[in-house]
Image 1 (cartoon, helix red, strand yellow):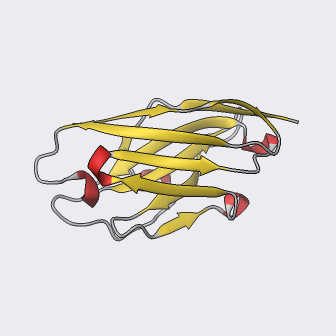
Image 2: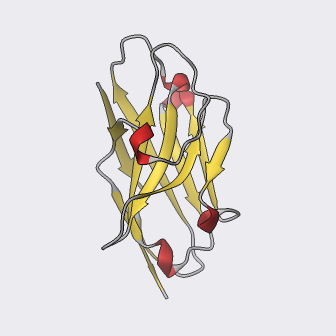
Length: 132
């Protein structure tokens, strides 16, 4: 079982920056953190959860169009930690942000899907609020 714990949310004015972290813990039978597919998702009030950024085992990334050029996803396999650096934040970025993980046995991750159903493990979320 894998547990994901997010941190780093908060309140910021438009144009500001925040960094989120997500640390994984727990045991997986035949997989290691560097084999995980990882992603950040967000859910604004009254809206469906959407994929924001994802990362495969080779550090190839995928971003939703609305955050391209402003957000950067990265991972530190030695620390079992996923990051999201958010710059030039806008009020429409206000949401609960969730990290997510998936792995496929001992295989390395080649997918960078932004679809919720491609991820099995989820964190509890961290709130990001951007004021105008």
